Length: 150
Image (cartoon, rainbow, N blue to C red; front, side, top):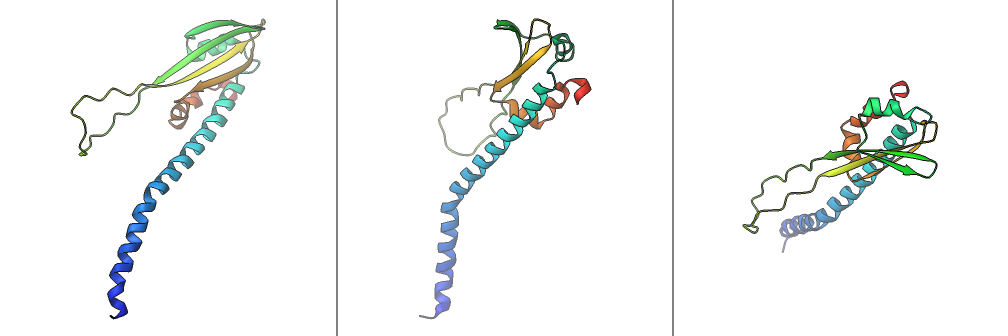
């Protein structure tokens, strides 16, 4: 049998190998994107909260609006703001699935907390949530830095 007969078989085998590797490559890409997002998120949120150190808490209230919660903490008072970020709707699919209605996806959230001392100056801040990266990527966080430190 001539060697040219094996070329289609080799091509088909290569394509099959690529298709088998695609899910692993997609997973690796998703992990890299998640890692990059977490790094951007952490850096941006840290810069944002650090911009408030030493600033009167009333400035934060004026710029961010009233906090959703105020909590007494050792050495001061914590002020909490929370952003709710709707999850994007799932695109329609042609795949076969249950005829039942899918449960709506819960919204993401990003919580910011500034802690002010007895003199009402911000001592430190912290953040938590699963949507801080989203708010970071859309540029929303830039408007949350203290005005004089942007």
